[in-house]
Amino acid sequence: MSLPPPIPPPSLATPPKARPTELPIRQIPGSHGWPLLGPLSDRLDYFWFQKPENFFRTRMDKYKSTVFRTNVPPTFPFFTNVNPNIIAVLDCKSFSHLFDMDLVDKKDVLVGDFVPSVEFTGNIRVGVYQDVSEPQHAKAKSFSMNILKQSSSIWVPELISNLDIFLDQIEATLSNSSSVSYFSPLQQFLFTFLSKVLARADPSLDPKIAESGSSMLNKWLAVQLLPTVSVGTIQPLEEIFLHSFSYPYALVSGDYNKLYNFIKQHGKEVIKSGTEFGLSEDEAIHNLLFVLGFNSYGGFSIFLPKLIDSIANGPTGLQEKLRKEAREKGGSTLGFDSLKELELINSVVYETLRMNPPVPLQFGRARKDFQLSSYDSAFNVKKGELLCGFQKLIMRDPVVFDEPEQFKPERFTKEKGAELLNYLYWSNGPQTGSPSGSNKQCAGKDIVTFTAALIVAHLLRRYDLIKGDGSSITALRKAK
Image 1 (cartoon, rainbow, N blue to C red):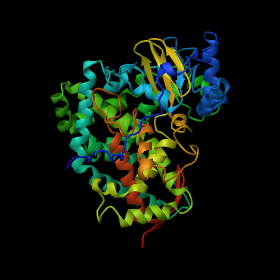
Image 2 (image 1 turned 45 degrees about the vertical axis):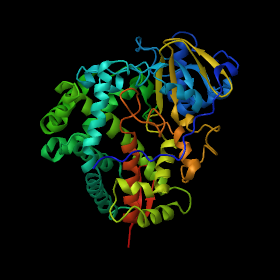
Image 3 (image 1 turned 135 degrees about the horizontal axis):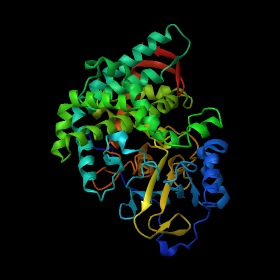
Image 4 (image 1 turned 30 degrees about the vertical axis):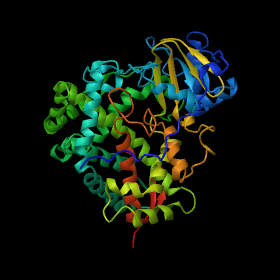
């Protein structure tokens, strides 16, 4: 069994365009400010006084433009090798330039100009940090795509069986409590499931990994990304201790080595396939760990709580509609083929990704001088300048999306909804795009949405009612 192709729209739309020569040339507004002081001021706004979404909104309103200059963390005082200067691109049209590999270079810009030490990935630059012009990129990308292809035969049964273990645990805890926090059990489910399907490695074969694998990944992720994210601790302590410097790999080296050895011992089949794509065994293991831990586990850990919240607190009647579709369509046993019939469930998944993309920022460095266009202006971009898109605003572009601030479950249904998939950019490319070695679109773009839709369908087949939010469950009423 192979993965089904993406559910195609009846027609492909393209963002509204005007040739650059038809648009007035405008100097990019905004400023990077005084050296050191400008970036520091922007960092405090970004993390403390305004928070990321309002940080970008405030400047967009100030400059009356969706394209402007500013700074993003990390910055001064101890990031002397990081240039925080960026050009923000905050509408669908300007942001789409980041998908044009002729215009932008994606080398070492996963989280902007800041690059965590390669020690975190075994002193190897894994595929996600490589530009398409680098020979190793195509090898790593092909390996990632092959992992997903080879796992397709076990993906659904492993998903459902491990999901049921997670739900049984929540139900048991909820029977003695009015509310249960599900984040830790959810991560345990994700780690076990993803290890089995991506690495073909069962954590139960290693008691230490089975018990602590998810927390090991959490620490590995946190230590790399702390300078770039807010964790909601008391200010100014967060600024002083979490955002002022990078953290050393030594803090998590023991845990990472245990995960590496677990994959090496129990994921031999997948590792071998990596060598068939021209990767060394070491390169295959570190790329596999990154796909498992950073892309998959990290992404789903952010996205699934938002999806559960969308279902539990959606518009009146949404659960009833979802329940009806899940039970009346998709066949007696859920599978990839079921998704073709679950239009509303797919739409809810897409709408959740639109409102709350798991990766908030996307970056690309100008490969050459070029002219970037928004809807009403064109801007001259110089080679080497770093473009940055904040996706939560981009996918609320009022030119493209009607009532963009509203969660509309049916937004991506019918012909009009299918055309909107061209502007669903959460995967570093449109939902209608195809990942390949020649682009930087997420290799797991389709399997992420398929998996999320199957989870929703299974939940609504198992339960008549779900109450809770993005962190806890307060009620589950089993289906009669």
